[in-house]
Length: 502
Image (cartoon, rainbow, N blue to C red; front, side, top):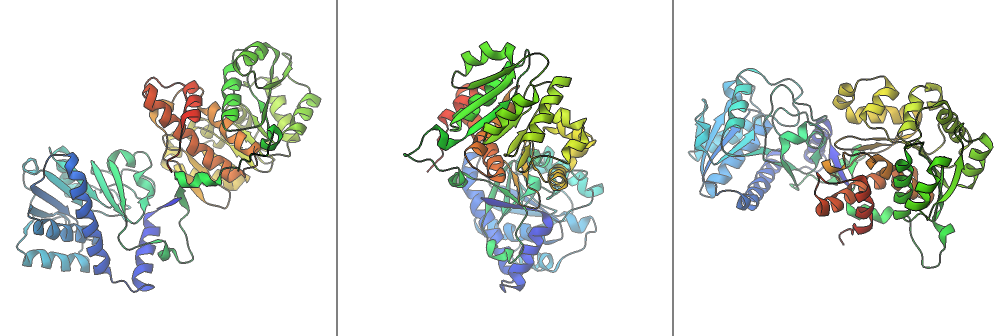
């Protein structure tokens, strides 16, 4: 697991490192400049050879980093110029900036107050604004950034692209479009959230002396999983049977929507679930018996299942998935109400289940314990009454607020998916690709999460690991099919073929 930080959290880590561990700010700045230059030379081999470099500096600590980088690049034999854009725009100067500028002047590095022709450089380094930016970028600095973006050069940002919110990824007026971003110690949340990710290019997170020791008693609230976290998956044993790995009830499908039930059930089996029971309309029997012969079926007529039927199926289950493809008819509403009122086991509510909940706000207040909801932004908008645009602007905060309000684990799906746990850690998923933006992908995710719950995983682990594995399966499948050709059924093969790195 790796942490992502906000601007405020990173500033606290800086302060803790200097005050608690007595590492002076100039030492940290020098280490940051050194790792930046080292990484620059590692990745420039993928691009044209850089000889002429322009570093555009603000007059705060990010600009001071840029000046230190200028000195080190000059000492490596490159032709370096520094545009002191912050000073020219009337920004106040930090002590570190003043010191680094004095050092650069002593070495004879060209310090410019007016922007040169930027097409004359092989590399442009952005060191204008750092992680503390909270206001819009306009005026002369916005013009400079626009000129940097138009230049036919390799563009690299120091720590974060100027104009991007470190917390939300919002573009604050105008932002630098980096090909690569070299960020220090921990990734910044805004570099991975839309639209900040589009301005960050490839993000390289480099150690430079600020470590988890500097958390002291206050750890960041956002993390990403890595393959090492798959050790948290439910353990399998040679001495076992299908009962060992749980029974999942999938209440899914309606007339004409059998595919949702099929994909969900197949995904649960691919995750190692011992037995999957599908509660679905009679019309889906033949399709399910053909597509998922391993599943146990309980079917019902057009009027919907009786409450006794639902109660019996729920009583046999170790976990439940309710909602994929059930529609929003009165019968579907009775089905969901019966599941939610009867379930005493971990329950996933997805798709049409969420659409029904959006019209029954009182049901949200009585969700089963260990409940996981998996809305995409449109479903979340219906659940909360907010617009999709507002949810995108406050993506992480919206998921966390929902989880805290209803005591559920909220899996909010978008370009990046976040998993928010009531009163706990929040996860941002970095696996997956745009090929997964296709019908049925969410049904596969519900089956993965439900299968992990049935095998005994806690709601937090099932949701976070399930989202990670779902994305990894999508990446594995896309390597074979290509992203454009990817279909939800290919994710099932991706689950089969995915082999975590040792």
